[in-house]
Length: 90
Image 1 (cartoon, one colour):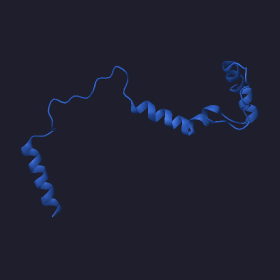
Image 2 (image 1 turned 90 degrees about the horizontal axis):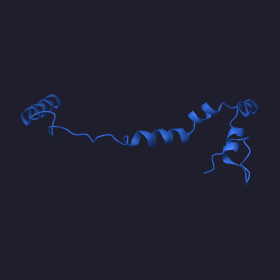
Image 3 (image 1 turned 135 degrees about the vertical axis):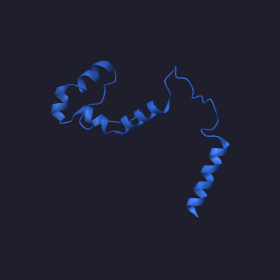
Image 4 (image 1 turned 90 degrees about the vertical axis):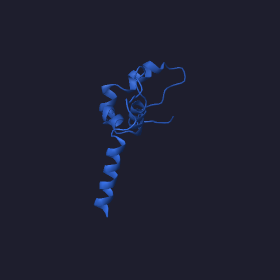
């Protein structure tokens, strides 16, 4: 994944990812580049995709939806609503 921010140095071959991340995401680097990393992330497609993925899956212990009856209204009530819609439309 190549999601490089302009001006951020790439990680060196044997450099610790943790140390590199702390170095490049510091307030000093933000000031030097004139970038607010929080705003940059919030306006990125990565943040949008993460949000969509998070909202697309239910929490681990969530129960499935269960309805007591199949329809919200009785058959007679549904028939009357359909008839009324036909009457209003034509």
